Image (cartoon, rainbow, N blue to C red; front, side, top):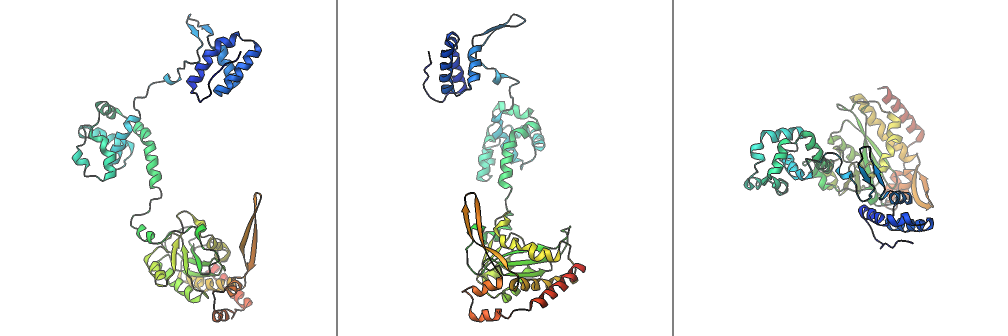
Length: 416
């Protein structure tokens, strides 16, 4: 003997009713019949076989307490939802609490509780629609429940505690914090809106003249006050690098450094990719790049890997030479100003760099193929450069003299 149950998705209450309906037949069945019934019940209810056995065996079973109270097993009856005290302050209060929270300027629950107690005579009586019309459209939608507060809600608002207000408003506050976490400054964003955002995946490949910019702060352990910085600009195709010392973060120093770099570079810059720092996002640099016809783009906020080429050069070219100590005097700035262009020359002409030219996925691994060459050689191979500029570039510096100068200035910088 087996059972026949239509296939479908059942609630737990319906599953228990099916078990109760088949319990009497299960107890009278033989061992083989019980096994067949359990197979059908498992298939229909998706409950565990042992759990079904327990329900079937205990359905209708009678027990007596020490006081003589008769207890009958019934799987369809559950008292779990009736345990404990019923909630007095439910989610029906949320629209009214949210409206009061917005009306008070997003104050804390303690302040909101005090506000309701202090002004309950006019707040709980209902705010006239004429007063609500003076608010913006979005706030009018939120404040609309305060026009007519039912008497039962009024009584609950009079007796509610600050802890209960905090518990009910927590989802609303969490949503508000998440929405406003990355909200930009309303005035500073005017210029940012003009500068387009470009991620690492949107960059053009193999195009000479696309550079990434970043700064290295020589502040030591304390970032207060004025200190020196190093401006790093790297061309992404050839890895040609230019370093310039900055007296501080003022835009005039970055502006002068970029003008000097533009006169030094053997190729024309067509795009400059910067981060969101104030040394780059300012009207002076924006006007300078627009006057020269250079695209000015920026990284996404909190995504430093949008300009990975320049980020990978910060230790190799700057930190390894001058370390992490603080440089803030005029004498130290003069040493850095003399040292940084020499480091650029040394690395552009003589130091080979690795560049990924191919990626092949083999199973779960990615095999990369690299090309190793100096930035100087890569620039000479470029078809975008004229013969005259290539001949000028071929007037190479003496490596031994250059290394000696860099070493001497490096020792001076560390002792300054």
